[in-house]
Image 1 (tube, rainbow over the protein chains, first blue to last red):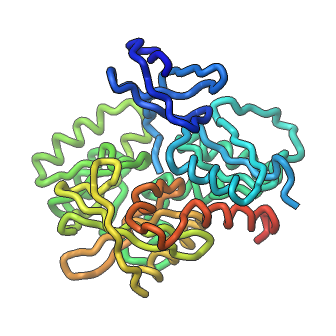
Image 2: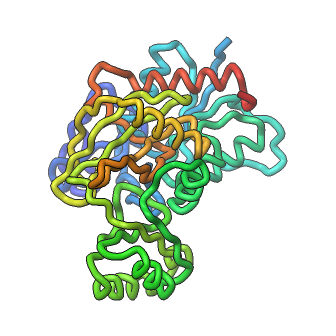
Image 3: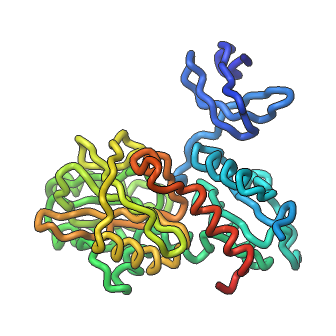
Amino acid sequence: MVSCPECEAQVMVPSPVHTHDILECDECRMELEVLSVSPMVLGLAPEVEEDWGE
Amino acid sequence: MITEGSVAVVASRVRGEERRIFEALQRRGVEYVHLDSRTLWTFCDTTQTRWPAVLNREIGYERAVTVARTLEAFGAAVINSAAATEICGDKWRTTLALCKAGLPVPRTALACTPDAAQTALDAIGYPAVIKPLTGSWGRLVTLVRDRQMAETVLEYVAAMPAPQSRLVYVQEMIGHGGRDIRAIVVNGEVLGTIYRRSEGWRTNLARGAIAEYCPLTPELNKLASSAAAAVKADIAGVDLIEDDDGRILVLEVNHGVEFAGFQYAMRDRVDVANEIVDCLLERLVHGVER
């Protein structure tokens, strides 16, 4: 478990987890990006940009 | 010999698809480098690439094209190529390529201003659809039911700040009965087809549509493989739609195909990530000239 950088709720981290994986906080529903695995650091995932897509 | 760092995967966002590709590379014993495009920079006089084969999974269109163009300039074989990415990322260029290849597409027009778009819409008839040239997931795609609604939507288009946003792509509305078809093509081979069913008029899985297995017919096979070839894409998600007369039309081709829903609907009929890795390794062996 690690704290959500937005609301400080505890976020369950799946195993295995990799750098840049996207997680979601169950409390505030923010998308979070795994910035580092060891130590575990979460940041807010980038917002969707206009030219994102398939 | 596949050495450490021979293969790179460019991605700024690791979705389920990228994770499956990484796992497929690991299963094959391929040492790969994940390049986060948000951290990339280079000098202009670089003469040699560190990665002979690159899979471009960058989610942002502008960054995807720039990274592909740059790595190709340094000698890398990039999948999809910059040329294919440029075509697929622009709906109008895609439509032109499909038309040039003689493929059936909905009646479509590009207008250089919102005023001209009104004339084009009147010529196409209502209902019609206005789409942004770039973007995905059905975002900002607008169903225009009549002329009055068109005037209102085009007023908003005219107020958009970016000049590109004021180029208006308009298309006849195809009555599709709540479903379209997605094919995935890798290295010229159609891996399969799925239906995307929706209660709304947009059938993007990103908007909640349901993915269901669709048997691959010879007609779908030919249309999908021809569409991928028309835009020069090694890896392509081809969207097809069946009109009220049963005619199948090609809607668009996606260069950075998302395949989680496709894989779910196809079950164990195909392993998309594995096929993508096969394609990448083939390019590693054969290089840019294939």
